[in-house]
Image 1 (spheres, helix red, strand yellow):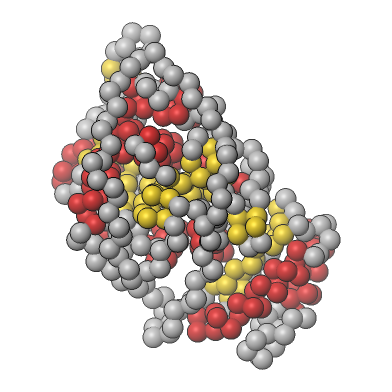
Image 2: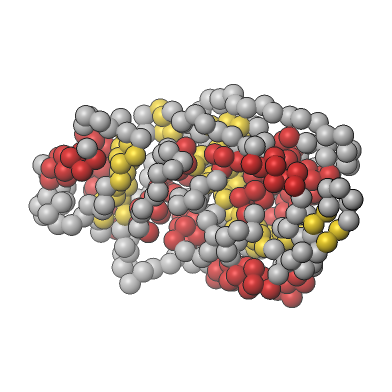
Amino acid sequence: MSETIKAEILTMLAGIEAPDGKGDVVARGMVSDIFIADGKAFFSLSVPAEDAARFEPFRLEAERRVAGIEGIRSGMVALTAEKTAGSAPAVPPRPASPGHSHAGHAHDHPHSHAAPRPAAPSTPLAPRTNTAKPGVPGIDRIIAVASGKGGVGKSTTAVNLALGFAALGLKVGILDADIYGPSIPRLLDIREKPKSNGRIIIPIEAYGLKAMSMGLLVDEEVPMIWRGPMVMSALTQMLREVEWGKLDLLVVDMPPGTGDAQLTMAQQVPLAGAVIVSTPQDLALLDARKGLAMFRKVDVPVLGIVENMSYFLCPSCGERSDIFGHGGAQAEATRLGVPFLGEVPLHMRIRETSDAGRPVVAAEPDGPHAAIFKSIAVNALQSMDSSASSRVPAPRIVFE
């Protein structure tokens, strides 16, 4: 069935007159692999960067016609381009317009362990100082939560950090940039599909966070077999064609490593900074160094390092064990001259609440683990404020 639909899409595309008058886009090899899932079709058109504006009406018409094909409810068509030295920048996708808010989940479960709440920042977030790259209307700041490798608890940290920012009184959104392994829908227990207002996607709200993820658009078990250009295009559209509304902060949960997604975010948006998540052992720290070096290379301030799974607390006796060693991330932060934002223990309660889709900061807002994440949020905001005044425009990355 899907192969028949793909053939119909290709036939349709071949019949649309290309705006540059050089023949149909299918015969010229401009159409990527077509991915179909849950009644949605995803593909990209590779065009010269200088022709991006001319092909925008073509892209819109392709999306309209794809949505009219039997078996397809909607389409996502993206323009991609490999820039050559001296070429004009491609026109970015149309930004999302601010809109109304949507009610979401409210799952607060007080915990018996009381913990002092960290003080909220005494001053509001400072405005962005980097104007070299277009921001997202309505969003004051965007930060990335990244790791050099998988398995260090980055997504769990990103979600609880976002909730920590929200607990300080900020309006916060979270974008799941891990196209291949999205975790945010499960961590926030989101089961509904987002709706759209024309081309603009309306994010789902959970625990006070506005959330967007590729995992909300396709079924959980559907593999995303995409190449780099499609990943970058999907990221750009999820960032700029979503009705985020007014946010003080957007937290981006990055995929592990130093690949296309990280470069796309560094190129397309003025990131206020990046938080690096690592575990204490040497192997994880080696990969964390690579992530930190990558962000520095593209002129994104590193707000600091979080040491996750820093130590284990026995739930029965309370004895502490340094399973993966301890203090490695803090020592590395000192060595590299970046702030150490805090340490998070390896604790069953954090794992249980994450698996249940009730992040510990929301499930136990007055508990000791929530206090840790709120403290890390405060430290990250302070690091952001200190780096904002010295921020300079990031260089443009050109692929030859």
